[in-house]
Length: 510
Image 1 (spheres, one colour):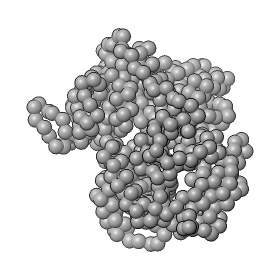
Image 2 (cartoon, rainbow, N blue to C red):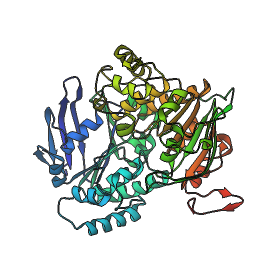
Image 3 (cartoon, helix red, strand yellow):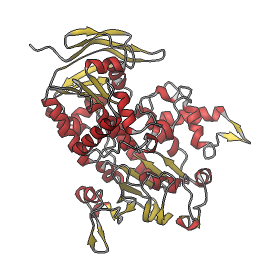
Image 4 (cartoon, rainbow, N blue to C red):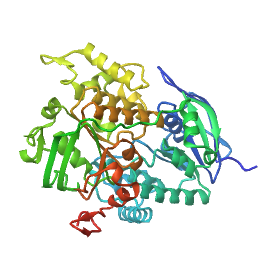
């Protein structure tokens, strides 16, 4: 019987306030893609961090190719042949893509050679990355591509993928799957963490299910259904969101922008943005990462100011107003980067509530903090969105990514906004929580809010949206009612291929 590439026995990790993993055992063979399933906070990421040497186990054993090992650090893990693509990025903002890649390699390689290899892999796998760009100028999706490419450069024996497709387009996902199958067929073992059940059923050979830090089952994903996998993960069936017809629709926010460049020289400028956002419904905006979504969100939220007439709220020009003024009017924004933009890990949940809800949730009075109100507001977010946290006084960085996302979503929705812009609202969130968040967005719209959802997951957009359009090359496609289009058409539009004045074009940025 062949020796397993990786085996963990009774691996346990205990933190002061929580048991993250308890007696977890699993076995991964060479040439196998092994999924690790579980809802947010189930202990998946902690388990991967122990295997990769980021954190030490409290007890238990790790065997690598039949030999017991104590993995001291990520560098030690890479020496063994273990590579990891993190859900949250481990990149230096002030360095270029090539420089970040050099730092991850075990041997010194000339920067020009690294740049060449990055371009080669980028072209081969369809993960567009410019090795000369600085990380602080990259979108979340582009940073994810960097993580994948620099890990693949090391040709690992075991590749750990933590939510690798969260911000990839369907076409890029297909290409990535082809790559992972090639790596598997060459003998590499792959540990794959994803909340996308269809991906696991299509890609993975075996699966281990975690719940509350313990192994609760194993299965062969191809023999399961999305419903049965969901039951294994969360212990019960989840409710599919329902969308009733809007009762009252009227314009509340209008964008008229012929051209707008941002301060970022690498960012995609906006062009021909003529958009009417209506109360009572959800507008979905699809697009490949880096196509102008960030600039559009910043124009709506006030992070980018413009000519007054570019942005109208209730018919009044507000283009010159900044973030605080627009929030006070009811324009709320949930950015895609929850770790660095939407929340601050070193602050408590109560303090993170203060970041955006100080005025609308009345968390301050006469310039003074009202800590009891801050804690009460954070407590309501925790309860309403079923956030797994010890209470409002825990640090945001102590939460799993999905639970932090649920808290941030609750923070914005409980402010009762008149306009809510959400970018990637269910990124890294388990299937049950994703359904809950999507229903919350629909309900918010039906209660009179104008909701805008930007997402690269077309299934999500078709589930929540009343109208849908695409942004590509900084330009907006026509807006269509959801029942007058299809996933195939919107997927084509994401490449910029829609009709402009009766002519098909091949590049939305041309």
